[in-house]
Length: 191
Ligand SMILES: Nc1ncnc2c1ncn2[C@@H]1O[C@H](COP(=O)(O)OP(=O)(O)OP(=O)(O)O)[C@@H](O)[C@H]1O
Ligand SMILES: [Mg+2]
Image (cartoon, rainbow, N blue to C red; front, side):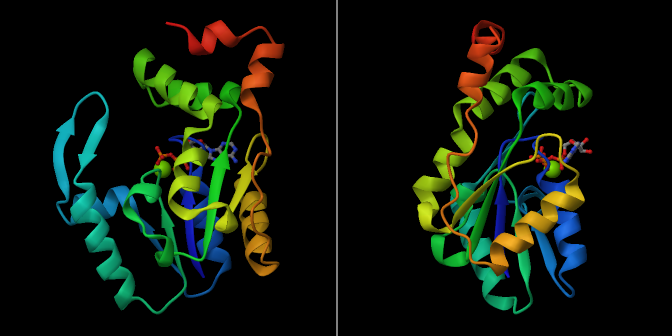
């Protein structure tokens, strides 16, 4: 397994990855944010937006690290499209989550209103999928909707998609139409 799990902050990447790792014996998780901090590949700490990583350095460090790893591995983080090379991974999962659920999660995290709006808008517009497509191309990407599903179930879906070699499952959600239909477009996308 050479798996990347990406998606907007709060969609459930880490929660899901833990279940995947538990189900694949002997597998390891690399948390990109944690790796960046541990290896000091940080340009600055931004109090408002968290860490600002040194993408170029981190890219090389992760690539070097991956060369030394022979076990199954899941690489997790929204920075995956910026720090991984297409040849680093075989499968890329982009997790998606309804903006209505995402907003609650980000509120629970006590993110600022500005940061919540930015992240939710990014999820509605599908920025994480777009970023992943640019880096990895559509053939490696499976997009999964986590809304209302248990992490254990999502982990099974991920493993099944790898086993069946399901590729190019994209365009499965349309949050923009959803929020438009519900009359919430301005709530989510206007300042
Ligand atoms: N399938 C799910 N259903 C309900 N709640 C979930 C689900 N997956 C994760 N959560 C909850 O949502 C929150 C965010 O999950 P998690 O930390 O895994 O997101 P993340 O994508 O890793 O975020 P980040 O990019 O900021 O690290 C957590 O409180 C977690 O318990
Ligand atoms: Mg996380």
